[in-house]
Length: 504
Image 1 (spheres, helix red, strand yellow):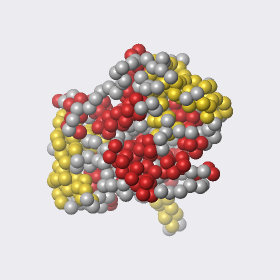
Image 2 (cartoon, helix red, strand yellow; image 1 turned 45 degrees about the vertical axis):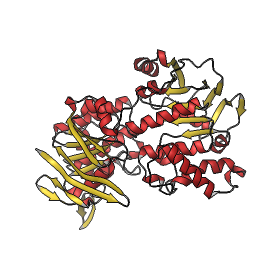
Image 3 (tube, one colour; image 1 turned 180 degrees about the vertical axis):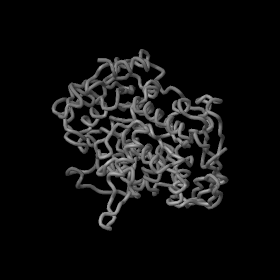
Image 4 (spheres, helix red, strand yellow; image 1 turned 120 degrees about the vertical axis):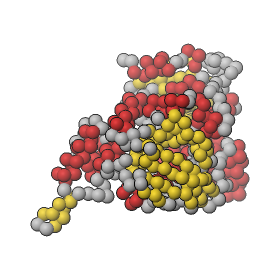
């Protein structure tokens, strides 16, 4: 019997129907996966259940109660907890204080209510133990890893006696071991008869932990199936209405070493020791991938190349010419682009419209005096932005739409457009498909391959081994800040890449 039911729910925004007569149900003790492209309506559904968005029609049934909409308070009172992709913990507070934020327990001392720290720590300890977290409740959250912060959010949901826990892209920033630990915790939650709504773009996870999966498209219900009754590859056409390619390799060659080197790094070493004596070349037409565990030095190396972090030694060459890069502005002026891992914090300006976002790198590249001098040519920049909106198939209401309101995949396309408009020669992609759907991924891959074919140097960092194998012509493996292996695609396997990443 279903504990939560959404019946014919519709949510409208100006010019957009975000949820269109959508129906969906969840049972206690099950993990129900929500699947769909960016913009399919998953986030809107979550916001309806958390009381942020108000439907214009339909009903929500929780247990034996029926609502036409929920307020945030009603959502909490009906035992719904949301763990967002961007975690909502407060670093300056302790674990216990985070778990009880908004509902701090008090006791009276000489008739004056004060926070009952002892009770709070005791209760926090109990719920941390339930999910196997071995941290003192008094520990500051700033001292925790991403996966531990996520565990605090789960413990907080348990302490609030949640019956429905919504997890939005919970493994997007986790390592393989951390993901396995999260799955262990999820199985414990299911044993406690807690319903879990799980949103993920990683199709391989569905078979590991899912019970049922509901596919959404354009705000509409498509299909609900038992996970045991369907292959993950059969879910893709339901999501995007078309087949997607599995390989984006250059079909004409397997080894680019005979081609001219576009870009070269020699003996790059960072001051903090996060990467040591790194050397490699990127050849014409080649996509060079970088594999390794989180913290192995891949992103740190890219930051050093781009001037975002200081290096102690090393040289960078573009088409044989040595570049002097002291900061990102220098890198940008010299033709290097960096699509960063965390697009929301470092990828785009949240207060910029699409046309301004696409234009900003071009404006800076044309500027002088370190970016302080230069002209803004609005008509020209709007026209350029419009061209890239069409070229990269950015789904938006127009160039005046705010970038932060776009889906993750379309935000990523805007960021790529920004660097393409600046005519960058070297494109660094750090986890370029993180948190975006399979359809948008295929479009990003196609863009990368086209750029390589046009003569751009393409560097790609990814923690997803199948992704690297599907698009990279050559893969370099990092371990402990150094290069531990290098493979042509034809010789690489997931096992070889993982062994190079972990072996001593």
